[in-house]
Length: 144
Length: 409
Image (tube, rainbow over all chains, first blue to last red; front, side, top):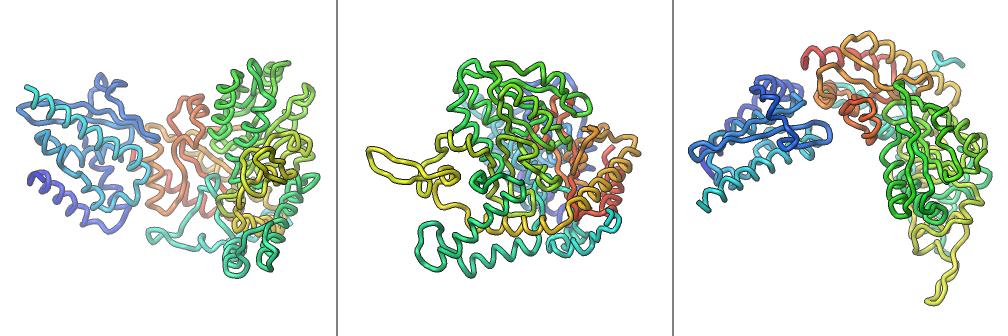
């Protein structure tokens, strides 16, 4: 796995080690969610939407100098916090590195036991969508 | 005895799970509409069955099988008495409410509903009382019609009457809405339907834990409910059907126990209710379900109902004082459920926050997506109550909601 991705993941895992309690982790993710840059409403289109059972996510990407930059938003502040974590890891990476990364670091934050709903409806769908974007850019690059 | 004399603390001791802590905080369980907790007697019954007389039933000649068969069949009589059916033959054991409704849609529906016929359900149905009828209507070319509700979440009776006509062949309606708490006037609906000779199925999944249900008084043709929402184990439940209707219906599934005689040329079926109980049934859970019925039957129903009403009035008053909060479902007759939204706050975010405080609520659509669409909301936060909940727990919920607003707004 790409070292940069691995390092950022470890950094996040270490951050979460500071918290003993679920309540603290929850508030930390909410805080991250609040700080996530606001997405322009014009980008919140149906084609950019990943519909979950309890929250919606909109996601779009930019591809500059061989690197991917994601932009995403949600109607759930908690999910926005998860987006912030994913973007921290993936923004500015190369498509092939994102495709190859296991991206299971959230399991090691201890959040997953609390977010069964989000995981099955939102988080996994987001990661899958991010990988699909990366795969798309990778294939495009290879055919050129 | 009045509701205020009701000794909730001694009741709570019967439910071992209620005394546990989550995240170091006392568990406050407000997800009873999803599933109720179980008294020790139900848990003991399961353990006793598996430790002392586990056997397959209705076929064995040996001691254990006889003992298990008698215990299993006894529960049928307990259920009969609990809902006041005419005979225990009208009680079919199924996996739960969902299977009960599917059984009627597949068996009664396939036989009696044809192209152009109409099936009526209400706007507040659970998905399990929508999809089986959609499947049937699709297969038969029949039409599913929806009884509308008003902004309070009450069925509009005059609109229901207007929908009735010679093509209406079946009505399936929820007794108490799981997402709004509305108690529907099912007796009145059934009486009206019967004027047209239309049979009615009542989805009583939420009702059985809260109301004294009497199938003969309601005169419903079918009723489905689940054990696990009325203190019993998961995986079992009941379909009640009037004898004549059940006898006329073809089997739902084929297998052992539902047959009288099998040959490759011609198979004949067992009598009702066994005709609908193919294969080895869920013996253990049915027996423990019997223990749940015993427990409920030993409580004073009038006391329980008035205590729960008191809880619902109290939580409604307390939550109504929060200005960012809007209650969804404000019917005159309600039971067990308060559903609400918080202005500008995602329901799941608030539900997760309450979880950090040890308070269990449900968030989302509650398997009633069309009802949520009606109110133009993505979902609600739902707190649902049973007689073992307390006013102190409600105070904690109200405090929790206030804190959630502060944090998430």
